[in-house]
Length: 86
Image 1 (cartoon, rainbow, N blue to C red):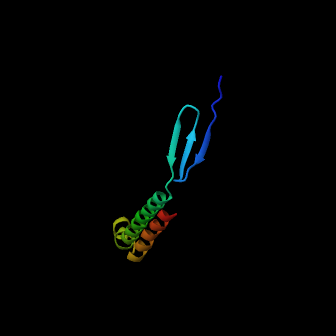
Image 2: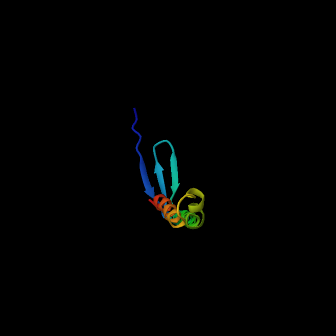
Image 3: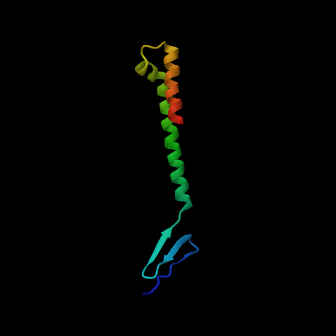
């Protein structure tokens, strides 16, 4: 039986070219695309926590802790926010 030899190399365009005996695969690496996707994900996550924090300060205490004192309800709402961060 014939052994399949696997080789790989990086060309000048930043592509990894793998040749596994019977066929060739090309994988394109794009650091710029990864950085953009990371930035977008971080921006969405920041916006999500900003909205959640605002709602915790203004709304969650009244909705989820109506029997508490208003100050205690706000503290309890912020505690849920703190738990979501961890």
